[in-house]
Length: 205
Image (cartoon, rainbow, N blue to C red; front, side, top):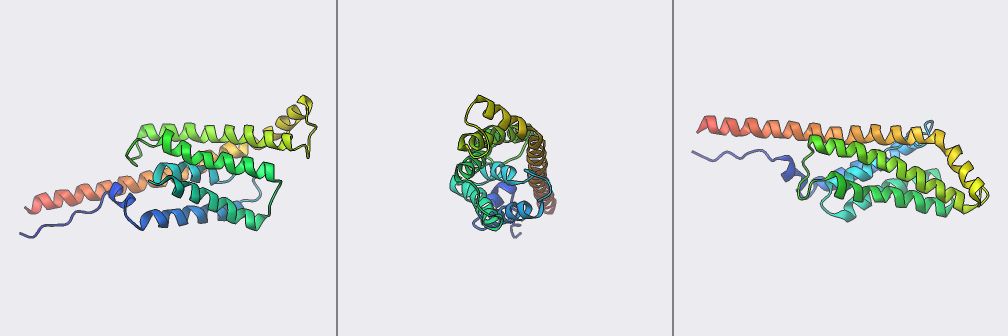
């Protein structure tokens, strides 16, 4: 009896030659298009979630960093540049998300997304929001362009930034749920299909 080929699992698909590049391109498109289209809600953007997922998914760290950097660079090219110390703080925070996704969310040697991974994703989204708030607003203050470079200026800077934090947190949580949730759904669907395929092979033998 001829052998029946089983369907690939999520891990095998994740390691195929072309799928990572397709996912990278998709993440970049989501990143820059969302930054351009969602202009009415400040800081409600998917870049932090993309960084977290890229670090979690891609086997090579440089691919995770590339997906995040391209989404930022292309959208910044369309939106326009801004003060370089602030730009450095923005890029630094968001690229850090790739390392958080790799070393905090991801299980060593596996791209399986478990219930514990979901909890860690929520914690990582919160970490990213707090990191972005702390670092970028410190850069705004340190630049001296908008606030006096004393303690009063620092206090005013963070106080004025508080209303924007809710949008950052909402965006990071929403897009992390959407991206990781889509991945988890795809994983469950593939696992179900693989299990059914194996059962059909056993029944046929």
